[in-house]
Picture 1 (cartoon, rainbow, N blue to C red):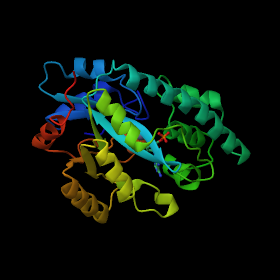
Picture 2 (picture 1 turned 180 degrees about the horizontal axis):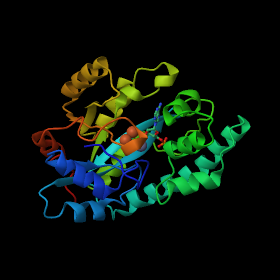
Picture 3 (picture 1 turned 90 degrees about the vertical axis):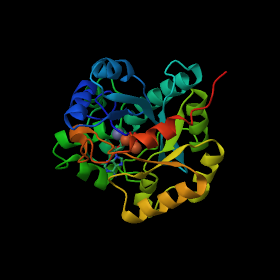
Picture 4 (picture 1 turned 135 degrees about the vertical axis):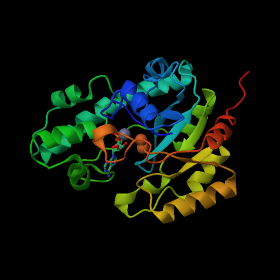
Length: 276
Ligand code: AMP
Ligand code: ZN
Ligand code: FE
Ligand code: FE
């Protein structure tokens, strides 16, 4: 229910992810690139006739107090004008922000260039993993994990917040496009600043805006996170999802390492608002 491709900051093609999902024996594949719906047509074409069900979505960039909050949206209409305009804005602002992050690295004597970052991103909205890759190429760090730990994690010395919308507005936009919103990996919020996750009060505001689910199970969550967000889901009648957040070679998470039962996916998608 949570995977990336090279159409955002993963390293594998959507066709490869579909083939791997089938190989693994998965019944379905959530397609959730950051701030884009570009993989949709290719995902449908690759899955056509294979029996694999693709659950099309996006991982929408929101923020709270300058720190990332990711909101997964499933079942959205990629042609919805309001959502499309916001996605375009998010991608444009990512380019501006990438230039600022490159400047930060240069100030810190790490000689990356914006041109190389653009090359590495290709057609994808530019994400920090692309920048981290450029830093590794200069030899300043051994791997992208080190780049994040030293400079690029939320709140780090080269971190620049990106333009993002309020989490509640993200929920409204995704619902407005006919989809359901799921709060992604809430436990990761503010990790570098000693926070232990998205504050419950902020989640409750998202619930009031129509949040349908919460990704309580994520490879980077602790057991405490899992328990806490499962309890919160029960208290607010949210569907619990589980996703690998697969990024190909850009992250250790393996495809299929965290899965959601079909019945839960169906329960989630049944919460799509009826559109007139
Ligand atoms: P961005 O959307 O440009 O802010 O980048 C977000 C992506 O960067 C996430 O989807 C992760 O793949 C990666 N990321 C964020 N924080 C970390 C971290 N602390 N360590 C490793 N990867 C991270
Ligand atoms: Zn990512
Ligand atoms: Fe995320
Ligand atoms: Fe993700």
